[in-house]
Amino acid sequence: MMRSDILDLFEKHDILPTQQRVEVAQILLVRPQHLSAEQIIDRLMQQGSSVSKATVYNTLKLFGEHGIVKEIMADPVRKFYDSSTLPHHHFYNVDTGELHDIAESDVSIGSLPLLPAGTRQESVEVLIRVRPTEN
Ligand SMILES: [Zn+2]
Image (cartoon, rainbow, N blue to C red):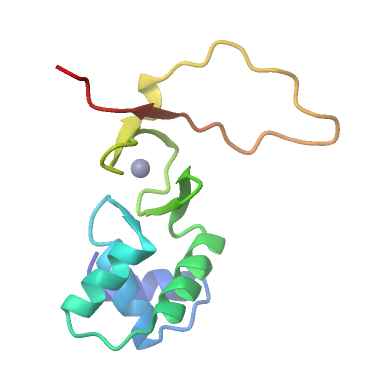
């Protein structure tokens, strides 16, 4: 995603385009990928950026609230930010911590329970946890 696309996106969501927010967006939204906040912080540091950790966390939270990125709680200690916000599923390698996309059409869900009273379904996401086979 080009800088001008990011600025358009921010404008569409009424997000003030601070330099820090643009820098975080340029790392995460450049291609379909899943990054943790720590990975984004590492990349910013490699670039010599002065964005603070707190700003990165706040920015990711803001992007999540606006639906610009999708939050994936892969396990209790690992939260990832997905630059693909269209519905899809994931393989999660518990050994390496890597997430891989599964097309929505590759998963069919047979039957689901009735929703609790007073609720509507927002989404159904499948996370298939895998680990390397032992030889
Ligand atoms: Zn994904």
